[in-house]
Amino acid sequence: MMSNSKQSGFEYAKKILADSDLAGLVFWLGFRPFNEDELSTLIESSDEKIELALQKLRQNGVVNPIKDDQEKWTLTNDGDDLRNMLISLSVWGRQQMDNQEEIIPELIVEPERVANLKELVKFRDGVVRKYMNI
Image (tube, rainbow, N blue to C red; front, side, top):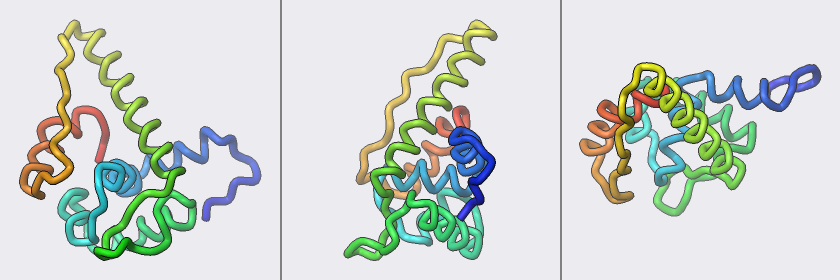
């Protein structure tokens, strides 16, 4: 767990969101439950890094401490709140960048929750990475 004796709430949240593995887990686990192999593919990180990141998020109350019935990880209600903030900040930032460059923003359509991993990787590469560093 992060030491929080002399930091603001914003700094605390920023430390989680600044780590691309942690932010990636928050984003994808809010999309739907995933197992470690799927998360490794979506986040492009090693199994060891994924397990360490999941442990940090569990300690911070972002990820549920146990897997669901299908052996997949899920976010807590606090994790859902953090994901909503991550998306809001990312969209706001991208809109500001596009406005400064006079670019017309794209309409974003998330894939269906049942989308296969190949479709999600395509969505990650074509859309998600324009908005967040995951």
